[in-house]
Image 1 (cartoon, rainbow, N blue to C red):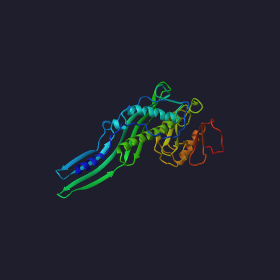
Image 2 (cartoon, one colour):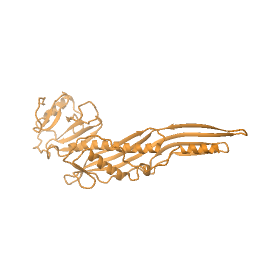
Image 3 (cartoon, rainbow, N blue to C red):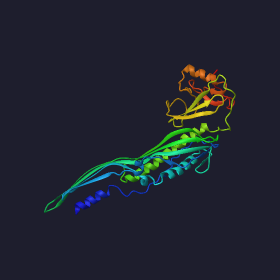
Image 4 (tube, helix red, strand yellow):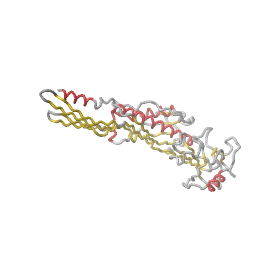
Length: 351
């Protein structure tokens, strides 16, 4: 009887009942610059996860009984959340959280889930799951005699951390001209880790919540960066200039992100001053400039990196129409928009 009580106690310690999951967890506040003249609509979120992330996976338990002598229990493998454990309605929850998150961070004048906007932000769930790895072996051997009954217990247990993983595909669609066009696309990730506690499933669910919050915080930062240059600007419609003449037809400006984790590059049509493309790329040089400062890029629209002399010549060719200044770095020209729209300062202007 003693050996079966010991076995029941060991089995009870392998994990409790799985509770229904939800994506709503602690908010990860992060201030971003607002573009109040832009309205943003987030339509219903699409769920494109693979079947394995809907079905989940349990850690397998193998039980071998030594007749009249004892038992050997082995639990090993990956636990992966299913729809119930992660969230039974992940797409709808993520839709609500995305609207709330981007609205609270002020990425637009209005962020809505129902009415039309200047831009659509189309979100697709590519991955959303939590996981942990378990490796436990337990052996109970019972030795009985006429005088006494003894039990030998051998336990090898390894606790591994819980992880949450979220990947969203985000597409920003400009609808202002009446002909919708995709102007920005990125795969946004969220990640979280929780300690190897006894309530492993609960820790996995918490990790999924944290990963979701992490993905939404990153999404807000990326969308705000894109709208900052794709919007109509702080003081009304974009300026339209006369024919470009001998100027390069396209030039690029770029700035480092607030946390130096990515670089924005914007391509501008020289003759009109209109933005033609906006990119977010890994930061090639994290200390090229102060975060938030727009610089004339050394990379041309054709992808050619200019030499020092070529960069100077390029800046001089643009200086007749655009405000370019060497503020605190002789190697870079800061970009202040079309000439006449910024206050003059004591700076070096390319000649």
